[in-house]
Picture: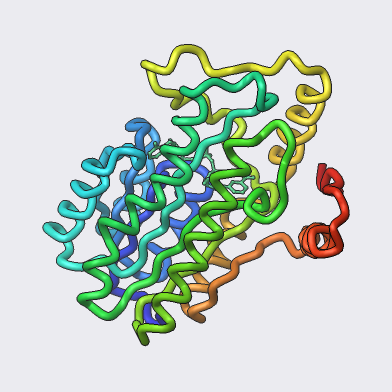
Length: 280
Ligand SMILES: NC(=O)c1ccc[n+]([C@@H]2O[C@H](COP(=O)([O-])OP(=O)(O)OC[C@H]3O[C@@H](n4cnc5c(N)ncnc54)[C@H](O)[C@@H]3O)[C@@H](O)[C@H]2O)c1
């Protein structure tokens, strides 16, 4: 989609982190914004900031794991702007612990947000984009969609799923000659609050699991430091805008992880057991 000015971008998890950076980048391209987030304070602050710089913004409290809420987000978008051109299924959460320390509530939360959040976005918005024969969906996976991270099984599982479902959609759109496009975003470490995700842990879920495994604590600390020293969200957003304009599927913002990804598939096809990725 070469020309973005005057078009409508919807960003889930748009109140903070990479989502807020995406919103700022699309606003700078002259797009109208629909921001969706489960956390009202950051949602309102983001909307106020963008409105102050002259962007038309609709802010909608949305839990992306709830299909009715995402249908309502779509309906509100169409009512306000009459179209939806770019959808960033960006909202995501992480909980770190050994697989045997996790409970079903933790799995359901991460699967609900990271996987069903993306599924719900596609289900609600694809019919509009197909009818327009114009649109671009950006699904946020992670390096954890290409490499398996230890002590992060729900995150790793859901991000692999997002890569897979995005690639399926890519083939379907290409084979049917659609002018709707899809990208999958697989960043490495980015300076955000992803490691404080449990701030939005659902009230009915009890306490989020915490690890008592010493090596898991070390990996968690190492990863939290890597995030604190990670790439600025604005750089990720810049690459997303570029990919949308170029109709490019893969958005791998951290090329230094590519050798580990290639090493993993080489091991798989040679029948070698997995090695912990170098990034860990
Ligand atoms: N930060 C990284 O290093 C990194 C790396 C790879 C991928 N990602 C992915 O990037 C995406 C954005 O995360 P971030 O790093 O900006 O984290 P973040 O925690 O800073 O921001 C996430 C935003 O999503 C919102 N959110 C959480 N649950 C939600 C829900 N159920 N419905 C709607 N909104 C919800 C939060 O309120 C927050 O505003 C996620 O999908 C994450 O997995 C992040």
